[in-house]
Image (cartoon, rainbow, N blue to C red; front, side):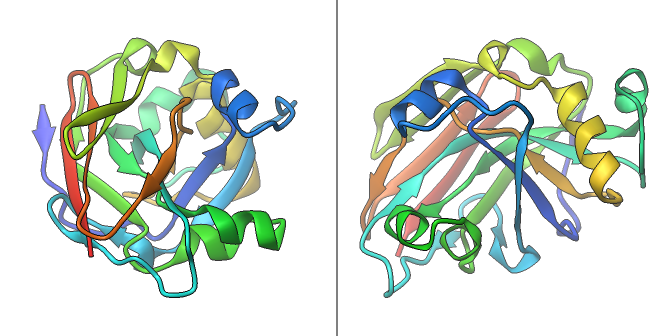
Amino acid sequence: MIIKFNKKPSKVVAIGLNYIDHAKELNMKIPDEPIMFIKPQTAVIWNNEKIKYPKMSKQVDYEAELAVVIGKKCKNISENKVEEYILGYTCLNDITARDLQRKDGQWTRAKSFDTFCPIGPHIVTGINPNNLKIECYLNGELKQSSSTKNLIFKIKKLVSFISQVMTLEKYDVIATGTPVGVGPVKIGDKIEVKIEKIGVLTNYVI
């Protein structure tokens, strides 16, 4: 079943370094627990909307991700209850100012610019999220290609873990991490995040 987006999430909770190959790509240690950060509501844009390249950055990267959309308010839920609280799944592009991420030593500024969280094209229900092909195309050229079976922390673990920290509201989004192959974009580029059984999220950089 396909559901159209009609409301922005109150927050996007994103997970860093959740594919082993991506952690190696960044020369970072495999985490013992999920590494969480927040992307603000003001970063969210939809399918076919424009990503604005910020003046203070000289390296902005794409990051294709599977996203979980929460279906009802939850807190402190166990892994075996997680499916009751998931509305569905969608594509997400965790746009990152990589130079600022390295400079700051933490991720808030690099991840939080307006338009840095494209989501879409819609929400899909009734699919198994644990073995979906995930790809990213830059101007039609394949840049990322992996499967959600390679996630270090699986969907149920992530939702349960995050709910131990904060209340998740209906329509909140969890970005589950990106595979190897992240890279820079430039003004005028077309970015497509394609996930099996979900569809294609398309955005342009201005």
